[in-house]
Length: 144
Length: 473
Image (cartoon, rainbow over all chains, first blue to last red; front, side, top):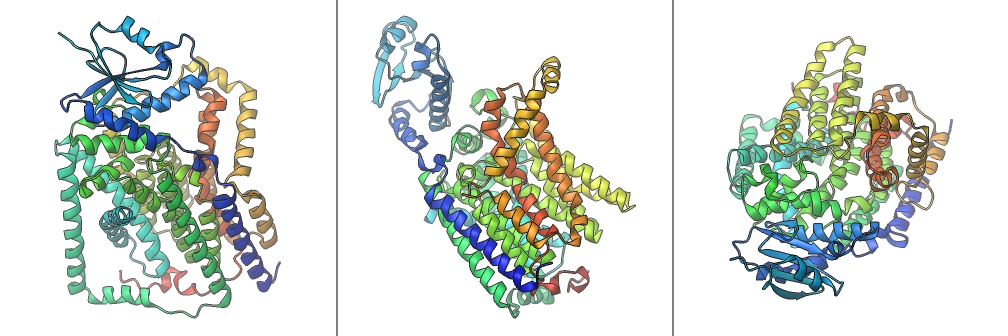
């Protein structure tokens, strides 16, 4: 059994080691998730003009993205889509965002240039396409 | 920073009201018990407030109307209670103030460890605030589950929305709403959905853990032991998860408090501790789905404790504590769309259960993730093991069996879920195991430092026994 003095010394050593280890985690090698940009702030900024352009009475909007243009999406395509769709849905709250084209207003999230062909093929003619920047488009389908 | 500080203040009235309720159940007075009651008050206040908001929404009261009324009423109630208590029992208030003013002769080791603890708190809280401000929206679960629901409630101000899952997007509609309701309520009081509000709420949850460990271990094992465990907890806060604004840290807090109260029952056999343990375990189920598993486990452990004490009637106190929070959970789950993402066919589950390689894979993941937990350059498991070998376990280790059972059974439950998960096992482990370890980590620290010899008792002897309490009954 250690003496009281040795136990006190050991307690101080343990807390100092904890303190130094914490400093290492906080400042020297923090977890990657803390140092990389999650993209959420940028996405909020990208969605701001979309929110402003949408009429206030619109409660539900559609969503279409590059993933819809790919025949065999990879795991990476799929995970990127999950993040970007959920960030779009989060930014647009209280509006509901649903995947698909069966809506009067649709948010397009494209980097691939062939998206125009896809929209021409799948939307009624005469739809309006507004470029909101950063690959984000607001599509208005004119319904009779 | 102003919004962050104002947000902290918004959670103060419900915390103090929760404190009064806990104090009514457990009137013992010394700094350690007052601090434990304050932390429990935060959990209780947040739990009750979110539950009442849920019922108000069901009754058709708009969220902003409810939240602002609740805030005003809580402040009014606190002022009234303080005045009434002061007039009817002035001695109690004076005694309470005396406890806070009490000066003790603090030895040099206690001073040294308190300085280190203070330094650890400044470093840890400063780092949390820095990284949280870098990620004001948290991480993906915050956008898709926790802050997501809060934003719908606040921005729509529609009482019926939460119950009509066809009108909003949330990855898991049935995930408990304690966190989201508190954020939505605070935003309604602020009249702005400031990103600083979830940061402030998470800050309270994250730092309530070392505070609860500090007070409870000081109460049971002396101030030195309390300062050691709190420093370690502050230096292993797992910011990768907590900065993300997830509910896991609140579940970890509920689990820790349940453990503290069950331990207190074990050594004192007073039903009040079972009532409090039941409340904390019940609100764990209202915090995260994993809390339902914990509620069942803590119920079983409480049952075992009362049977061992030959006082089976005491179990009613635990049931009384957990009943109301459990009713809230049942009410919520039956009012929203429910589909478990872990359900799979019995045949597939059986095949998974018979697959030995899955056991090996999960066990190996448990070993490696536990070893790396905290992200220290040298594993905390190794450092704490060396410390434990040197200082040795004390006689109190025999009382720690219930606590140890809680955390072992909870992790065993998670192990079984991994075995039958319909998801890709690698992916499931990668995305969740650190979170699941975080749930029981504070309780594991509590168990370890209760079981280990303390350097010496320090100056907290006056508070270590109920017989020395100045509590009027």
